[in-house]
Length: 372
Picture 1: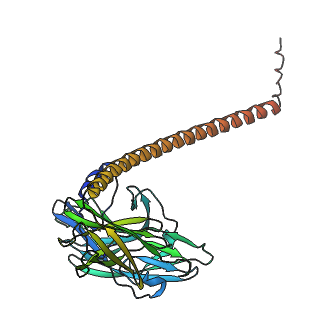
Picture 2: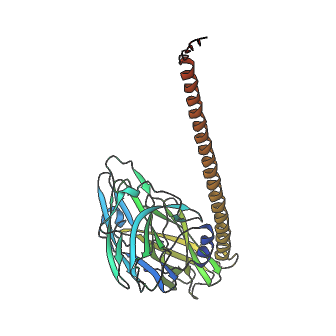
Picture 3: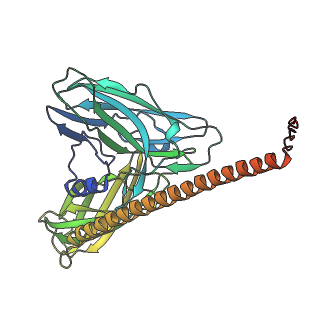
């Protein structure tokens, strides 16, 4: 989600199910209507802040900002459309639906008002690109806290009465963020290299390396593995490079690194080196490697599908409960209004009765006697 690239809408399984729930989620997006196509992509530019273990010096929307201060990042929005588009931006919320943070269309982030853009609600010409600077200003006195909002970039067609096309829909791109409020010491970046094991997957034999984020900021590690055979000391393999996805604070992740043919089932010394910005860590493991047994990647994939299905069912249940609650509140509000109306009528009736009770009776007019 935080990777640096112009990404295309490719989450086939997830996106095939989400429209049924009325959700909008697009790392980059295209939407077609008769006669025209909407399309945008974005890329975060490399930051230049050396603080927080290079947390800010990357191409992700990660911030560490002290209360009363501000931080800025720039990103490029590119049009892949043949028509002009209106671009608007805001901050939304994220939630953990499938074991990882994703855009929550019904959530609200508490720091939505902290974001400012040097341009917003502007027209992006067809097949052009522009750079936008976003500034996060943390109010004075804000508590030391971490937030994980979403940058929302919405594209819609420019309304033209003479246009040869008609676009009724808008599309939205959601890009995850991290905002840590505090100093670099308070927002400490730390991780551990936990273990290495062999496994067999659908793509062949791999080395599974487990990492844990023990700090207070997200991490995206890069590094390599170097192996030395303990039975034949002269046989070495590597370096074998790897890169993790974003690992949230307190979370763990296992990375699969393809094992070359030279890495047989034998005793190996495995040196794992991982890097997050300027923070570099190494750990050595002596392992009697085996690639037999359960296909753990297949198990993880099946487990992921089950988790996704469960999460989607949970979303349906949540949306249903929210609707029932809204309907119940609407009914309560209607009853309240009716009770107020009846009370007002009763007050008017009481006032009318009081007015009648205090009214003086009309004087009787005596008719003159008729003369005989």
